[in-house]
Length: 330
Image 1 (spheres, one colour):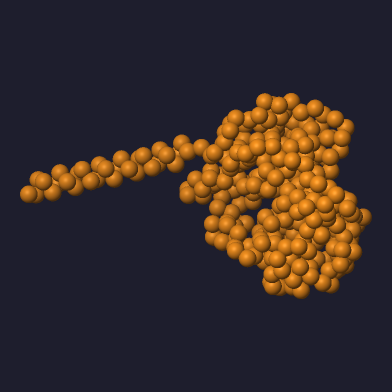
Image 2 (cartoon, rainbow, N blue to C red; image 1 turned 120 degrees about the vertical axis):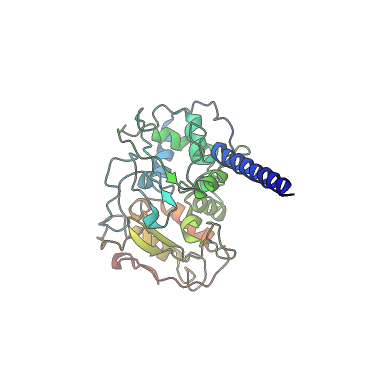
């Protein structure tokens, strides 16, 4: 009987060991959902270059994220070579690891100079790099997948014109199980993405607010980084980084949000940073790239305002940290 029990224990131990090894093998070899990068060669027209520059340097935040920023001034204006790599976010900032925005200049050794147009598109719209590895969703590809095909092409055309900068950025590093769960975020596009109707102010505003990833910062999340039900765009998310710690603003049309703001108030907040960027105390800044967003057209900012007036109003009072120069709204 003792021999039988001993054999049974050995068999169970072997099965458990095999299961553990199989699980470890699965976790280590699992790759995110993906499709081959499109074989495309985007025509670099003046119109695409202008549109790509406008989007990447304002609403999309590509340049502000992927560049060093001057955190001694409010909104952290770009201070380093554009697109050469941004400030790192670490466990100290509440991340489960370390992620540093990549060098997206056309440098062939440390940037994206050898990437094809299709590989660049797949990276920022579907979350997979040229090697098939998943990207950290700190790059909001879940929002960028909503970019129209022509707008996405325009961004690629613009990135090709950046001055190549040799700057090798450290690869993102996350421990288990975060490293595994991050592989579940990327997913391929299911088909073409049409150009939005710019004559429909609310629809176009929704498009801009989506690709500008407003919900990314202005929606509270749970411990698994999933949006809290009923809190979309209601603010209150704690954001930590080189800028310090700040709570995002309530953007819904409730009295505790922007319910009392006129369109002129809304535009005035952005206009306040168009000519002069006020200083900021250390640790009391904001990731909101005001100096870039101030260069958006009134038509685009107005469309975002029109859309925000249509979202469900949510009561959630959040303390503001705008400098006096930006106090253009109630």
